[in-house]
Length: 141
Image (cartoon, rainbow, N blue to C red; front, top):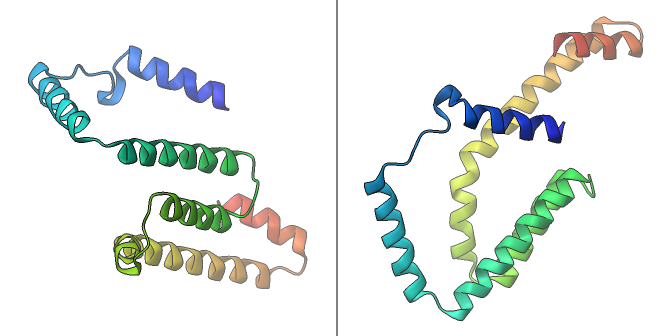
């Protein structure tokens, strides 16, 4: 699956399908280069260390999800704990802002899972045996 995904990405970029593979305008590139140059000038060793830590946490997230090392919620919680602990965030108010921004998405997920649970219950209750229930759920999805 991974190899097919990489091949698909390469082909989409190569043949410029769906708007991918477009060339970045030179003036936009120059703005990005200038911004990067200014950021590098003002970046401290502590900022560089934070970036390395965030990169390591991103690798942990990808490996843990890909290898199914734990439940998704536990992996997410470990990412939050590691990111806050190693980047120096110690105030609750500064952490709370990130959670506030994620609330609409979380509410949407909760509603979605509630609807799916009701559908599954309706399908399973209408069948007399569990294998039929599982079969019908696979057919519906």
